[in-house]
Amino acid sequence: MEVLAANLANADTPRYQARDMEFRSVLEGAAARLSVTHSRHIDAARAGGDADLKYRIPHQPAQDGNTVEADLELARYAENAVAYQASLMFLNGKIASLRSALSGSRG
Image 1 (tube, rainbow, N blue to C red):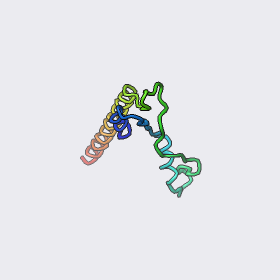
Image 2 (image 1 turned 135 degrees about the vertical axis):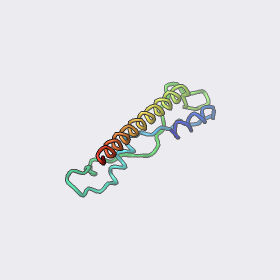
Image 3 (image 1 turned 90 degrees about the horizontal axis):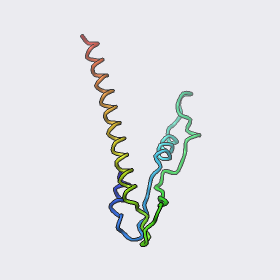
């Protein structure tokens, strides 16, 4: 969300190049740093990738060289916010059900 916010903040900056992050690459890079101590662990050899920020290729760049497309950035930001909120709601539900199961087993 920070990358998307930075893109939006620089939508009017001449020659600003919009950046993006591939979540899959970041996740694979994190998996590559895991050590395998059991046969059922993630195979770190098949994980890998470049976790650096990439430059986004615009559909229609501006005359001043700026590649930020504000409508697309806003849509991506909203999509990211909804996915984050849904993840939190799911985790809260899981935790509530675990607490309920634990408190029910005490009685």
